[in-house]
Amino acid sequence: MLNAAIVGLGRWGQNLVNSAQGKSDKIRFVAGVLRHVEKAKDFAAQHGFRLYDDYRKALADPKIDAVVLATPHSAHAEQIIAAAKAGKHVFTEKPFTLTTKSAEEAVRACARNKVTLAVGYNWRFQPALQEIRKMLDDGRLGKLLHIEGNFCGPSAYFYGRDHWRQKREEGPAGGMAGRGVHVLDAMLYLAGHIESVHAQSFRLAQDFGLDDTTSMLLKFRNGVTGYLGTIIATPETWRMQVFGSRAWVEVGDIEHLTTWTMRVCYVDPKNPRARSSLQIVTFPEWSTERAELEHFAEAAQAGRPLAVAGSDEVHGVAVLEAILRSARSRKTVRIAVRTVKPKRAAANKTIKSRTRRTAGRAKATKQPGRR
Image 1 (spheres, rainbow, N blue to C red):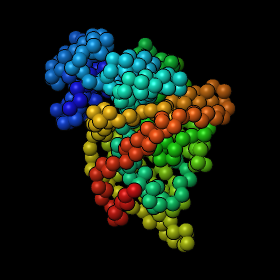
Image 2 (tube, rainbow, N blue to C red):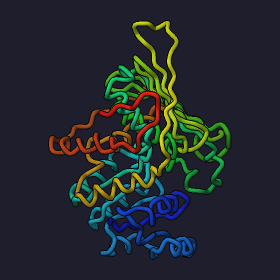
Image 3 (cartoon, rainbow, N blue to C red):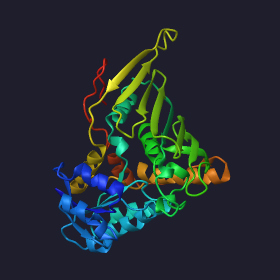
Image 4 (tube, rainbow, N blue to C red):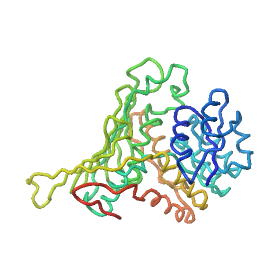
């Protein structure tokens, strides 16, 4: 059992605790950290853990094996490095960091101190997304051609003018930090790293806060194209559609990550005029948050690296930076290929396979394949 401290007990920090506490045999929360401990006394008592008003106190506690960061985005890099130096494993909520330089410094610090670092992209633990990955691997989708997606909602209205989530330095490129990075990471999981991006981002709904309307065109290194949008001043919705030469597959709905179905439509290239066949695939519901925390706990206890140099986590930060530069310049921005030393590249094989475990058997007319 991995003993963890939750750092930041706002809405999402409490959600992470609720997903795992008393429900997991791999991770438990034994402490919480927030500046004003009186705000979380009842919650901490309910879940049976102590509270610290200073992050350094948690890092000095020998009974704590790991920290889970649900803190402002700009604080992640410094907090990760401090945890690594203290010998604590680190799980950080997305976005990982806000600059490629700080992301690389964070992974180096964790590697140097032999602690596991993970980033909270819980979409990778969605059964539907894992099934799409297998459909690409076993050829059911054919050659991957294009991916498009969005993650939208009214979060621009959630927070007042002075809330940290409305600060542009915390949310570069509008809804990308809070929402869009999930879609971006899912695209990296399915299509690999990105070569270039052309973005636009505007604040249209309010006279303060983040941009609320952001979109971009993507070109992947393998030739696949993509579109990504995130609108944070509209009703809740999310969607991803993956187009292959033999079929397309679509997931998403108005509910935030509680849709457990996907639609697949096939075409016969030898008889393209024939009526396309449509399948509805359903999956059992489960907690992607608990799954990501347990995956982190397993890796930490096994001494296995997750986020490392050259990984999707670091590349995603580079893409986020490129999106911001493109939105400002209104020009296409290329993402540099980061050089990875052979030892790091070998470790990176863990990243490519880390989320390809089946989350549950799909129920469909056609039995899902396995890589």
